[in-house]
Length: 210
Length: 198
Image (tube, rainbow over all chains, first blue to last red; front, side):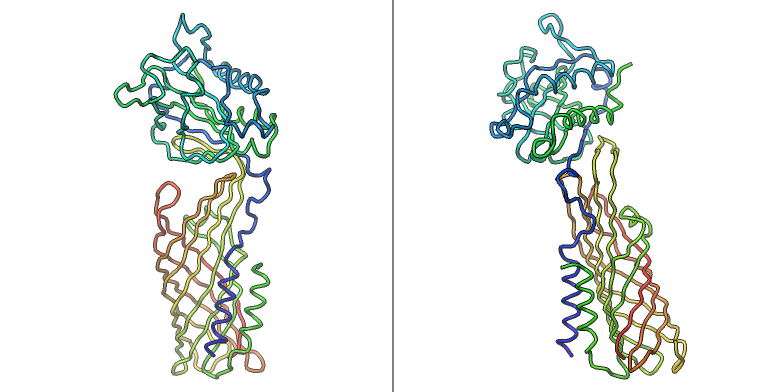
């Protein structure tokens, strides 16, 4: 009897292991858009932005031939138009006026936890708008109250860094907003990526300026 | 292995249990309705099963054991806002509960058929929560304690077989912190119907 009792128990156990009905299974279902925000006063008082003209791609991601440098202008144009439509003013003459924020755009090939991105300075160190105290030993801080999330492989990410409130003693540069279009490198087309960028701004109504 | 195949196997292999006048071994199909925070995982569950054994004691009382599972899941598409952000995309939530209960029941009649009963069970419960957004799947498993009062009907059938219809209220302890670092309790009501050998 002990054996016959054990058999139903074993089968019942096996029935519930490895079965996730209606689970997200197809690659096309895995594209998602995530945004994080620090909606404190620093964001509320920011009105001007700068957008460096380069998207940083990891070396191997460039070979994927989905989002390469040939699409940089198109992607940046979409980001710019969304910000302008929300009432932000772009600063292009950095010698004449310093912007409140800078928006950096990059493609991540590997899984990264949180909004940190190692070796970030190397990608944008040429940009002339950095305050004097910002350098390669600076790091991005998490948006206030944000929970850590994971940038998965194939993510197109945008971060809005606060140029006015970097902490020189801790080397921390605050992130005011971050948007990530996850999965675009592996499976989606450039139009999908642009739609994802639009969605990131749609779900961020606090970015609208009066 | 699909759940359907496994359940069929359980029913077939559960059948040869030695028939004893004072023992009932039953395989039950179980549907469930979520209550409270379980409702985050869907409006109802059509996926569930139990194995239950009952030893009769002095005619009106039984003691036994129950091992089962119920699962809840839902798919959503759209935007979910959080205090510090938002996500858009296909989301999948899955809740699996596996109670392992020691049970007892008291029957209204000694020889009536069918016989109403009231009873309940208590024991450990395994709970697994899954949340998936795009590539990002998060999983949390925990163990807790469940108290499961029930009312039901036990009946005889043919050739020494019998059956159980049971309405159970599952009240577990809180699970480990998961999304939002919050401890949550996942109660639900299940309706189980089973047959087995007496």
